[in-house]
Length: 365
Image (cartoon, rainbow, N blue to C red):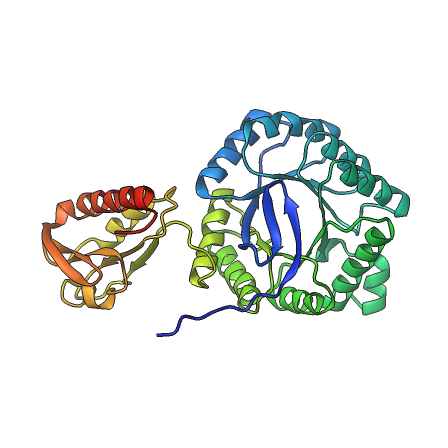
């Protein structure tokens, strides 16, 4: 079977810290902290958990000068690039750049006029960091609302492009763009239109997507459709949840599209009347045990000892259960029979052995 290949649009390359964005660099997964940024200990602790989950870029809110200056201490404790998120006060952007931020995010709807924007670009130039122009449907400039009769995709794109022109006129070109709305149709329309007008790298997401389940669905559909069309260089899944869940979901979207291999892919059946083992609990235990694994391994957890290995023959390793017992299989071939109460332990032991071989030899054995 021929794999589905996504033809990505080539965009201009920039760097956020050491992470390359644009061109054909891997789509980067980022998140945003929900701790008070000035609480350095809490913020660093959360970022470290995000790093462990695979987060590649982190954004922090900078609502005041205390938060801006806290970036110095935060940067000393983390290993991924940090973006300072600025609204309203351009002086906070300047202070964040001086404090070591790897990039700035500003909103053209509230950052101010040319003189204030110039102060921000001058600071970004001095510290050699890029700026993300983040257009948000909830804070679009009044003139574009009046011109387009409300918050439309056209209004959002016009706002973004005008701000790009402003930064260009100030001699600043290290730019990333985002256009975020809380509904999928408008988000899709805006990014598709913007992608036709520029080769600036795009940060993709559906803002204010909601809690865990609705947020995952909306983000997966919106982000997934754009990525499948080749649009998007970085992504953020916005959830009213622990931001670690954003990273997990982001990588699952990329894995589902065949765009990134990060961590195990677990294939598990939804169960039916033939299932005679507690598959829900087994799958939950395996998922929990592998939360921080970055090994690109395909694992199957099947409820039918008869059809399981065949249905999951493309998996590297898997288990399938029957009444009181199950089997371990590799690449669809049965290896051995296992008592039900040892299925999880033996599977995790085999996975650990795979991981050892992978780390030592750079490939799955």
